[in-house]
Amino acid sequence: MDKLEQALLIFGDEYISEMGAILIKEDKIASRKLLESIDTRILKTGFGTSYTLKIVAEHYLKYVDEGRKAGGKAPPIAPIKEWAKLKGLPEGLAFPIAKNIGKNGIKPTNVISRALKKVETNVAFRRLEDGVGDWVDDLIAEKLIGLSNNKNKNITFR
Image 1: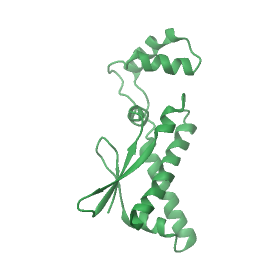
Image 2 (image 1 turned 30 degrees about the vertical axis):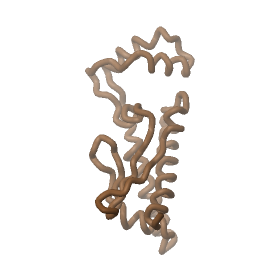
Image 3 (image 1 turned 90 degrees about the vertical axis):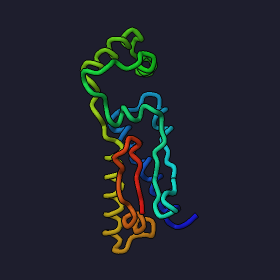
């Protein structure tokens, strides 16, 4: 494993930790299933000239991150029943909640991009504060390209 991969592992840990902190602050934790599922994977691409930090999590991170548009189809009832049970709400509210989500949507949290921005700010601040910074922060700051615009929202480094 080279230095950049080691730095990306450390960066990934800080990144998912920040995502978790945002989810907790925004009260997006019911069962802790989403929080505990968030992880990162490092993928080498382009003959080893670039790396991708891939987010791995429960499928519904997409909806927590991006929200849902108003006026769309109502979400499935079963996950809402499970959520209602965890929140101590009657199961009978699942259908009206799903209908309301379809009608009014869900506000996005943008947790993925907000966590990346926070970690980038932390890296920049540590580098400024230390004058030189440690090798992880230096490598990350030098190699980070940014959050991809694809549906997976991976982070690219070169």
